[in-house]
Length: 84
Image 1 (cartoon, rainbow, N blue to C red):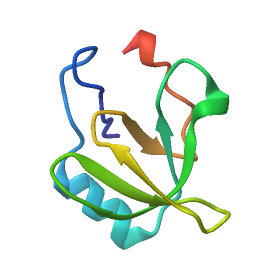
Image 2: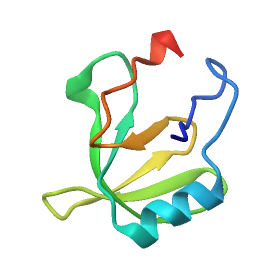
Image 3: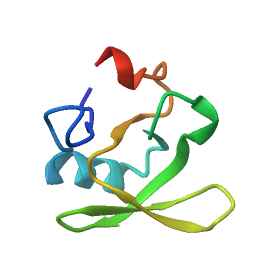
Image 4: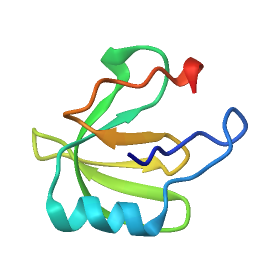
């Protein structure tokens, strides 16, 4: 499992290779932005650049998120950002 970690608080950013694997597979992912599960973004990876990732949510809206958040498969248990 690859995890995207927030700058300042953590030490790594999700790799282009992992984002490409999520995009090609169409796997639903979870983006953990803080300690509240209700603030997580769920969807599929559409595109990315050096600093942002575009995610299509289930309601078909597209959101741009920082690459420094935690990105993980939706099927896996949620990672708590304070415990990473």
